[in-house]
Image 1 (cartoon, rainbow, N blue to C red):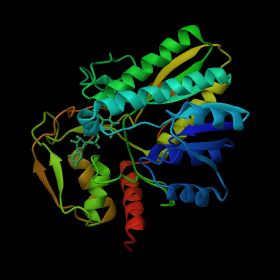
Image 2: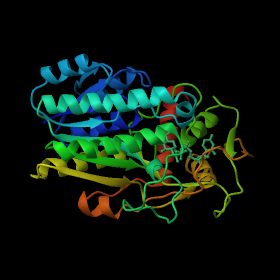
Image 3: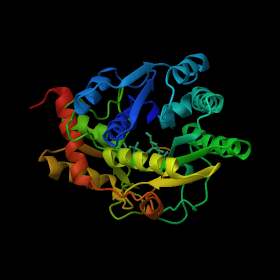
Length: 339
Ligand code: UD1
């Protein structure tokens, strides 16, 4: 039961590779290591106590991808994580996002058709809901115009898959992630942002480690309980397990055509300040932070209704915010060699 995992050395990809293997699948990693490190492969293999097949290749490279598909007969599904994911970078360099994130999906779909593979799981994002009118958001919540080129590529990719299924026997699920955080409990894999992190939790852990001198909380004048933004922070291992459930769901469906979307979050919102305070309490450490101005493009609050994933996929989150932030800190301490 081989599963091709593009972006398998990335944050969510690496944790999913571990959970796929734990569930009896044989993951095959494809990664161009543009935003991940080869040491991740060692971490995965240490956790699993076995070798994992991996390829260094770019998903936009059709010839290289074709060769990988040809060399690996018996692939049952593809999980497509590989994509650029920085909101601010996408604003500054939209063509990089439109070109790579969209063409990599098109390359994969063409090759899956050629190799007669018809089960795809696509990494989408809650960003497709834009600024939602009603909370929590369900999968029926209307899609809004994206607030960044990155967000727009997620919407366009969902549309491409839907259109492809119109004329091809193909099954796909788009998983809309909320805010993934945390690390593996072994501290052997975790989030490895390159350069200054733009996401909250890596910035918090790097501030705790002294790599950054101060965290800025982007605004405390929002119409929320404590004035800071509210997000749905989901532990990366819970998220990884959801991919295994989603794949099993697809494989059990005998339909020729299937397209569906699932929200993957905890169902509970937490404010930015609450994350900082929970991190401090969970790890007995103070974070040097200040309140700064709002960040452009931030949505005031968003969190998921996850009833559909709970009932249809038989999946629910298990890791608390506190536990997830403890794991994030243990991982940061390990990579910085802090005892
Ligand atoms: C954004 C995207 C999401 C995407 C993710 C990828 C939107 C609405 N969401 O999530 O789709 O998958 O990026 O990276 O476009 N914050 C601080 N200080 C910091 C960093 C963050 O206060 O130094 C705050 C932000 O203002 C925000 C919250 O923390 O309220 C979470 O921010 P972040 O981790 O960047 O994720 P999102 O912007 O929610």
